Structures are given as structure tokens and as C-alpha cells.
Image 1 (cartoon, helix red, strand yellow):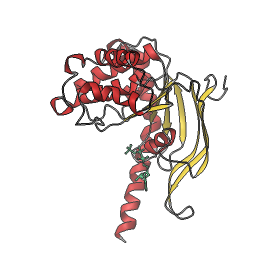
Image 2 (image 1 turned 30 degrees about the horizontal axis):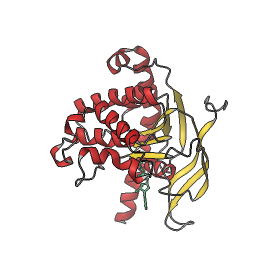
Image 3 (image 1 turned 30 degrees about the vertical axis):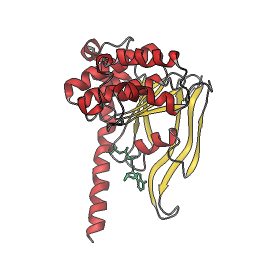
Length: 276
Ligand SMILES: Nc1ncnc2c1ncn2[C@@H]1O[C@H](COP(=O)(O)OP(=O)(O)OP(=O)(O)O)[C@@H](O)[C@H]1O
């Protein structure tokens, strides 16, 4: 057990990670130093002002970017499973593939397709995300919410050790967002892979997470970690009515609000600097 985080052994351990874009000495320091440990099977939500480096950190977990300084250690427990799957804010389905082919794509791309067993898995997640009847459709015949459900089905079908989600519901209308949050909570409670979930929604973070970490304005650091002690399975409508839910979200805003103001001041200084 890690005394600082209260989590059992770290699935992801981030030590002294910074990221500078451009010249190492004079470039733009977007992130860090970040210290973070994410437990196995933990659902971790990350909030922070716009531009503080949340996506940069997530991209590093996916191996799409590297720290300028520091290390990220990720434990790979089962080599038969892919390490990560990523779900983005923007639709990331392939327009030329059917719903069924899109859902199977992750398994095929990671070369973990195992015939009938994999097909069953794809069918299961199409069913879970309410897309079974649309399996022969192409994405341009689906709504935005359905396409995002398809991205989720594809990611879950690969059975990744870590699910990386970058504001996955930000582009959805409010009603679809509420439905998707509930569906994700239920799916995760069944499979319990490690999840890193970036969001601007404090209520979304409290509703879904075992823990919420708050990042500072750029260069982003972790300035607060809050364990969310709400019962599971989480039923969104019940959870939202709990006094603890309101308390967690308002405590988070007390911390984050200052950082959002600081991010605005930074933005103004940057614009003024450009104008001179
Ligand atoms: N490849 C890059 N080259 C130069 N600057 C970059 C690059 N990628 C990101 N940045 C800058 O690094 C900072 C952090 O970007 P990042 O996308 O990680 O922030 P974020 O917290 O995810 O923002 P948002 O909440 O608005 O999505 C931003 O100022 C961004 O412009």
C-alpha cells in the first residue's frame, strides 16, 4: 500500500515528469513536475484548467509522447492483453467500416483476434452499448452519441489493462452525456480495468471516479488528490442526490477555481506579450 496515495501497488507510477515543447532550455514548459501513482483497477479522474497538460500526460501513458524529464513506469500484468486503449473526445471511428467492423478493429489491430471467442466479445459489447441492431450500418448513419458508444465498445472489446479516456463525452448533448456516464459506470464496474479519465466536468469526475486529482495551471502539476467514497454500483440519479456528492464537487471547485483564474491570467499575459 502506498501511504501517499492510499492505493495498492501502482499500475502507473509517474516520477518527476516534465514536458517542454521546443527548445529544451527556452521552449514552452507545458507540464510538470508530475508525481502520481495510479492503483491497479483504479478509476482515476483528472481535472485541471484548459491547457494545463492533461492530454499531454495521457498521450505519454499511451506511448504517443515522451517526458522531457522523469519517468513513467507501467506494469504489464498480462502480455496477452493490450496495454492501453484510448478513447478521444472527437469521433474516432472509421467511416468506411461497418459498426461491427469498427468494434472488432481494436482486436485486429492489436493482433489479439481469436476467432469465435473475439467475435463473441465484440457481440457482447455491441449489445452492452445498444448497437447490436446497427451492426451492418456505417458511421455516417449513426448519431454522435452512437459513434461515441461505438468507440467505447471497440476499446472495451480489446480488454486493455488501461483505458485512457480524454474528455470522451464532451461533444455529446447533455441527455446523451448523462446516459453515457451511467453506461460507462456500469461497464467499468463489471470489468474494472485501470482507467484514466480526463474531464472538465467536476460532477462527472465525482460520479465516475474512485479518486479525482486536480492539476494546476500550466505547467500542470498534481496539486490535490481526493478519494471519492461513494457506494458502487453507482446509479447516477441516486448518487447525484447524495449530500456527499455536492460536497465533493464544491470542494473540488474551491481548489480548481483558483487554477482556472490563474490559467486565464496566463493566457492574457501571453496575448499581451504577442501584441508588444
Ligand atoms: N506538440 C505540441 N507542440 C507545442 N505545444 C504543444 C504541443 N502539444 C501541446 N502543446 C501545448 O501544451 C499545453 C498543454 O496542452 P494539452 O493539450 O496537454 O492541455 P489540456 O490540459 O489537455 O488542455 P484542454 O483541457 O484545453 O484540452 C498547451 O498550451 C498546448 O498548446
